[in-house]
Length: 210
Image (tube, rainbow, N blue to C red; front, side, top):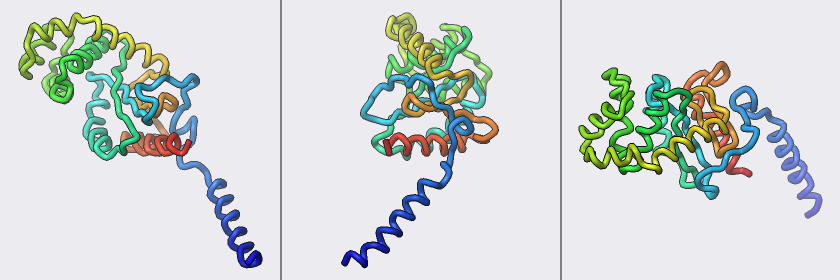
């Protein structure tokens, strides 16, 4: 019996060695960056994928259909969240739009509408009045909008998003942050937004294996 097992054991060892000898499909420093200090995620029980985005970014707008299709197929152990990026006053206003919609429970209704208003209708939503008019068109009560816009919860959420963006080390959008540990953005090695999602899948599997 022992003599029969030896060849199979040898083959298994050789196979395992060859698998680990294979180069990684995606390489740190080329296809993704490791964040120096991991950023806390909302739910430690799940693998978090965070998109850092800006409503005014045409690349983020173009990414939406791909992202929505990808999100629809995510397994139960992966949580997807969005986090607005901001490094100027307009981006802060657009981040406020996101969190006001979340506060009012209308994000599913307004998210695409906001993108379309900016990129299809050249309504850049730079003032509370312009944003209020858009939300009212979507059935939001004006008084409820004003209350949410000025609320402590929305103001805090915007500040937290700004802090998160700095902790992620993001200097462009869109970026994907995998479990607070890895940053993926389009570039020479990651040529397309579809490639970004492939790298994200790779890193999700990496996190799951750990």
